[in-house]
Amino acid sequence: MDNNHPKINFGKTGVLLINLGTPNSTSWWDIRKYLKEFLSDRRVIEVNPIIWQIILNLFILTFRPSKTAHAYKKIWRKDTNESPLLYFTRSQAEKLKIKIGNDKIIVDFAMRYGKPSIKSKLNSLKHLGCENIVILPLYPQYAAATTATVCDEVYRTLMSMRWQPSLQVIPHYESEPFYISALVKSIEKKVESINWKPDLIISSYHGIPKKYFDKGDPYHCYCQKTTRLMKEKYKTINIETTFQSRFGPQEWLTPYTDKTLENLPKKGVKNLLVICPGFASDCVETLEEINIQGRESFLSQGGKNFDLIPCLNDDSDHIDLFEKLVTKYI
Image 1 (tube, helix red, strand yellow):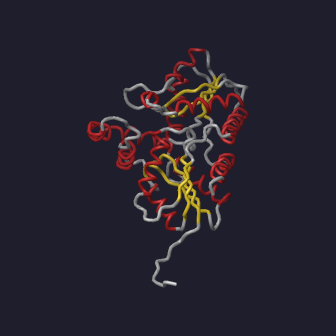
Image 2 (cartoon, helix red, strand yellow):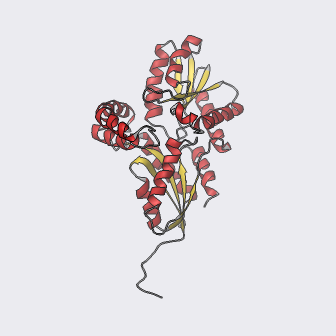
Image 3 (cartoon, rainbow, N blue to C red):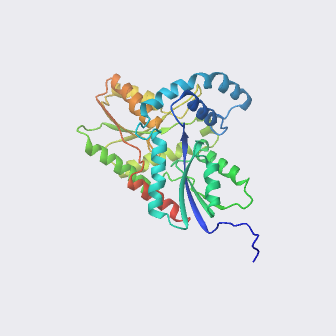
């Protein structure tokens, strides 16, 4: 045996949960740094990169950080001094580790933008001896701007490795029965907890530009499929699909959530629940955009009752779903 051979860890499997990301704090500079990384991703913004970088650096990154910081300050967790998305993603990984982790299986989490980075976590798993790594992007409905860019960053990291681990990616789970059941249970739990009867449930997903759909992105179809399956399982109250968080002047997937919330009271819908199935964790898009801005808009136009159904977050049903998704690969 060669005593000079470098010590190499091997024989383990890693499971890496990956969510979108979050700024490190609500400061202007931390928000700007996060937005720069996010909005520089060519999967997210599909325009001429030279022109876009001029617009991004001269205009957007000058003015938008203040607005974004204001939104984050409204929902920032003061108890742990972090965003809800970071808090819940860490908790998801910790709870999944309790269920499936052992000497041979290592569970961790990363963010596509911000910290902890995909690169740092993949290198850590490799160093710990993971020869096989299962990637679970926390986007139930695949889109190029979410799941695909996670894969891009994973593959870029592997390009620098001499001994690459084998890789399994779970690309989407929009119709997984455990997922649909968990969503329906969250609806039932909320309905039981309120003292008014909803007229309608809005199922709000993050939007994408319509031209991405026209180019063949399947995201819209996956969102509609999730809503359809929820409606098949929960028939007490009607559920309608909308799309939120549009950015810039171009057309995005419709109907728009914000416009829908403005117009529903005029159509006689006075009591409304909103669920956001595309978000694995509550975040600024659900807690601020929907539960604060959306609530104010709906009530100001004549709505009577409004409530947001929490994301699945670190609920036991959600962790059971993750276990089911990754077990077949470990």
